[in-house]
Amino acid sequence: MRTPSLALVLVAGIALTGAPDSARTDMAPKAPDPAIPDRSATFQPPAKEAIPPGPYGDMVKLGRDVFRETDKYARPFVGNALRCSNCHLDAGRLADSSPMWAAWVAFPAYRDKNHHVNTFQERLQGCFRFSMNGKAPPYGDKVLVALETYSAWLAQGAPVGANLPGRGYPRLKDPPLQPDYARGRIVYQQHCALCHGPDGAGQSAGGQVVFPPLWGANSYNWGAGMEGVNTAAAFIKANMPLGLGGTLSDQDAWDVALFVDSHERPQDPRFTGDVGETRRLFHNSRWSMYGQTVAGHVLGSGLTPAAQTGAQN
Amino acid sequence: MHGTARGAPPCVVCHGAHGEGIAASGFPRLAGLPAAYLRAQLSAFADGQRENAVMAPIAKLLSADEEQAVSLYYAALPAPELANGAAASAGLGALLALDGRWSAKLPPCVACHGPGGIGVGASFPPLAGQPASYLEAQLEAWRQVKRPPGPLGLMQAVARRLSPSDIAAVSQWFAAQPAGGGR
Image (cartoon, rainbow over all chains, first blue to last red):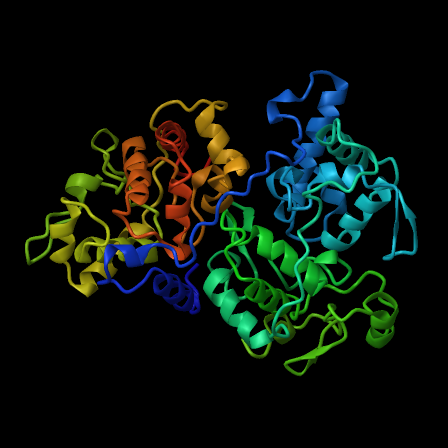
């Protein structure tokens, strides 16, 4: 990627590794590698090799394939450059990364989002409509059957209706300081831009998206759960940077979540025609940036080249 | 190709006529690697952050312009279509490369180094087709802090979570991947 902002990425990267002539110990990563969390008490999905042969196992495999290569296996329903495993790490197996085994046993459930009891399939439809900026597969579609089967297989043995440890993203306490866009931008440049790009557009190789876009036309739309700053902060704190989850401070996670969610992205599919009304109906939360004004732009009023990158960038 | 006026030997002697490296000796391919990454390595060899008895004196003989020129030259060369032996499609190496080991907080290598390890952008160099002995040596170097930890300290964190047999297996797997990316 030979763009003018490459220098910034490099400088940020080099700056983190310490001054060139510092002592050997100064070259250690700034944050200590946190103890790998002891998850021995957490629910364990079956081993990856344990998918049984036969039609059931084939459907489990299809669900796993949809999860990992969503654009390839669920193409008609995908409208952006994301895949399920971007936000549900280790193909939906990883505790504290919204694992599918915990979701499976929590449905059917009433959801505030749409004010009725949702089946698991309906919940999955929401993923496609919002997070994947695509179309909801119809009930009974093979894609949904496959994802259900995969999730149920992962959840084998888990108690139905349980609220399992490791479900979702571990909720963060409110930050000490109000989340701040300018602080968040610094966090982004230092810890995120290396992979997700200085403009949040992600990176590809060999025709495949490797690091997903976090804002702009190819990312999740305003209806997705990740647009909530609290949700994004919780995801980021536990899971990002990839392989270094838990190394950012809570404050940094909140700040960078606000920064990411203060950029334009595709419209909420429930858009009524009026940003203010759409906010009142669907984004009436202190943690949604939808309808708020950042850098002179009303978020949710539409993608423009300047709005995507943000005037301050 | 011809060495430099101050006596740096020609790169091709060790890195091959087309920058493909010499697998048997563990000399890495340079062809198609990102220019910024190559430049950073030359600087690190020159100032000793990256310890290497062969490259250190050579890198010290290069001026900044020469570092830049040779990095750009190799970045522009096509990645060679060679594989260094047959890779098992299953097995420990493939598992680590493609799935990682999340119980040890280890992401799959391809999550950052791209499909088949072909590399991503300026900061995540290709692993595909690099000599296994070279990849092993780098992972060992990160474990022993003989190489700068890299941006965000990622590679040092990763290497510390790998056992010697992990390192051998994953290095062999990537060595056998086609550098051009065809599968």
